[in-house]
Image (cartoon, rainbow, N blue to C red; front, side, top):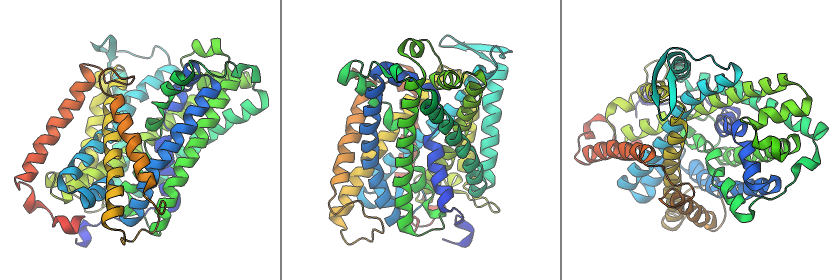
Length: 463
């Protein structure tokens, strides 16, 4: 690959850490904390995060070993291609791209939704109604302009995007620590009762949410080729970022539990904001925490445009997508067209209104766990087929974490099926899955017919 086709190695330890942390500490900890406790109880929620966190670490260990062994742009794309071949690599890559695109478009809808909490009744310029939600022009503009800004930052360089990410992630962590400090100072232990609600069923309700709150550590493998650090360090940073996110979520769950009692939790829209206001006796702190939530929206958004664009770029480089997706900007050395593709989808998402939030996330969640399943399978296959492959970071002597991650991923895939607790909603979410699948099938059969073969370097060189 010539110099003009190389990504810049500009990312440091801190860049990678904050890209992953910022992706995981999004908006969910602000809006979902109340439902964790009302579903499972205070200790039930903690147990769900401990179990879910361990399971995410199992998946993360697979990624950590493979990312250090193959620090290639596109992450899953390279691992699955080496272990399972072209066809499975396409499925894994297209599935994880759905997950990344879903988060990027989700944030474009979440941003104007959050602004509503800071500035109630600001909406004007009625356009239409989607699933009972009135879509207004200025509501759409906030999301679309936000998407334009994030896209522009990523277009001009991953280093600039990483610096932006670091600042906002520190803001999120600072606001979260303020809540934790307030809970330790002024929290009421009696509020933690009841400790458990609905026993195992309550814990399972929260457990279903956990892996998707942690989606984002896999941004590190996507940009591994742009990291200027030892390969072993990539795996260590990935596991450290997951561990830090687990501690953060556990502390937030306990902080909210100490700040609000059960009846208060059932009557709040933003439990985390109301909890900090109660702990410090001032609404100012609630507004401050919402600002931290806005920072979380932006950091997730930023990370998933980075991750998604790198997967699309890698797919184009290996002949799976048209060469347009594999174009590197001549000056900025970013996959500029892939960034624009995800950016444009983000700009259009607010047109669907607030109802699209749940549809987008659930549809994307199925793509994410499908990719995790194939990565775990690749981990196991490569351990058996290529035992001598250089692995600067080795998860364990045996492939036990691969099997644990495989079982976990398959379990979560089944939860999306009809009749299960997290079953996808008909028709909206299944339409999104079907549309993405049909688009992928079009590209897949075009690639198998050799339509993209002349556009790129050999697959061996790309991977």
